[in-house]
Image (cartoon, rainbow over all chains, first blue to last red):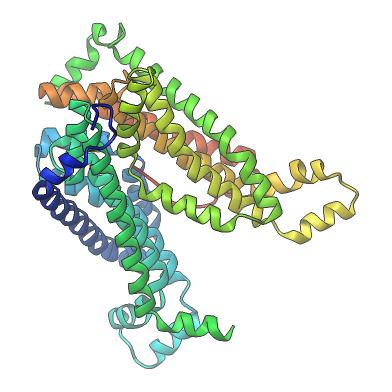
Length: 220
Length: 231
């Protein structure tokens, strides 16, 4: 083992407990952000779909948040909310909004009007129709958004390492300040693995949740 | 807090010198511009070539997936020890290399999709009109795919500006340095200065791209951003 070695497996072996807790922390930050972001986006998308004029301001605001670089957004938040999980989550949630809202609205828009009219004719009330007709038919677009949001958030959580949070990001931060590449490789590598694992999981969820899309492909 | 920030930005000594707002803004934009240019030279020619021949769809999809999964901070952080051990030092070069790596995937995939999805009947028609292959490329295929090509460049540029901010952590003296120092010194005025400067740069560049897109393609409305990428 020499000093220039890119990764010291020895270090990895001695830090399994820390790696394990960083994994939970990373996963927790990611899932909370995606879940909260999805819930907020669902409400905002429903509003934008019901009252069309609100779409431009809602999408515009989400786009504005999305355009602000992550470190700058955290720098805005830290003086107000401090170095804590709340700051991380506000930042992380705000990046998922643009991804979700665009895709949910586009997905619901692509539901065939015949189906919507049929549901209306059968006496579905607007909210029930939205939940039981529009949402399932928009599922592929929504799962696509979930995948993008999930993978993006896993990457962004590493940035919250720079404000003293961040699961694997804490390894990267510490590796940078000590110039110790093992920690950087471990932090970066594991977050890539987590992103790929969650993405694969969502592909599986989509297959199970939307069996009709496969049936259609088979007969096409 | 707001007062401290206003005091900071209204003090002229905070604008001058190598640690001043002026110098750091210029450095930030210079590095971002150089990286975007380098990445465009690397990404666009193969994307156009592969898009024309309609080959490499799997490659394009893989690049976009990998590009999204690898966190920009991780690439930046990894290049830091590499750059040090190969004598490129800290600051500009590791950040530049990381930015180029990050900017290639969105540019490549968008340009590839843009050229690939040009209606084949238009290409046929222009050949039938006697256009030479190069003319077909520059006068038909590239203008038709321009919306997506520009979308890719726009996404890449915004990501580059965001990641150049993170460059402060590998010693790059750009706008991120205000944020880095602000965190370390618990100095809200510096934090807000950095945050505002970076956010304004990103928003200004985004607006500029909106204008460029409209000017470059007077025949159509700009597309919504299909592929969202950010770190």
